[in-house]
Amino acid sequence: MPVIRQALFSDIDDLALLLKELFSIEADFSFDEDRQRRGLAMMLEDSGTRCIVVAQSGGQAVGMCSAQLVVSTAEGGFSGLVEDMVVRPDYRGSGTGRRLLEAIGQWATERGATRLQLLADRHNAPALDFYEHLGWGMTQLICLHKKDE
Image 1 (cartoon, rainbow, N blue to C red):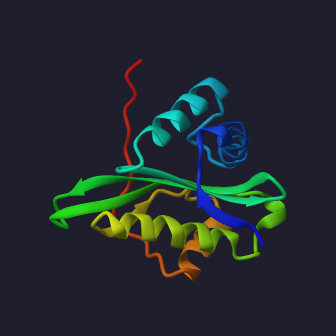
Image 2: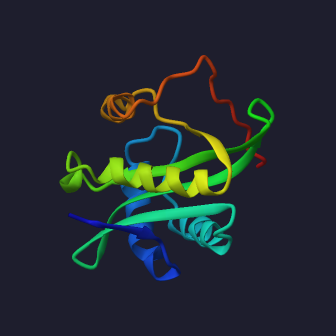
């Protein structure tokens, strides 16, 4: 069973490969190694408001989950925004994803978050089923974005 721990800068190579896997199944994103490595480094720079947990087996990262704290006016406090959640296909169904989300949830709760939220690709039925199985509920909100180009 993989060990769940906070990620380190030395994990960035493995984490970038996991993001490549994740972005291959998400229609809104495409993999750009330089950007993903830069984003991962930014996440790791501030463990007070940002966190990446990693599932490690045999010296390799086989899953990851990242989150950051945001202020929720609806909650009147912090919410944990889960940014990336991915488990290698050969480790799916083993409880690794559940353990990653529990670890990121504990991290957020310890920092005062009263809610977790995440975005998921609406066409990724296995992921949506996974989240529903763990008690996550859909909202009536939709996500919009605008890029500065």
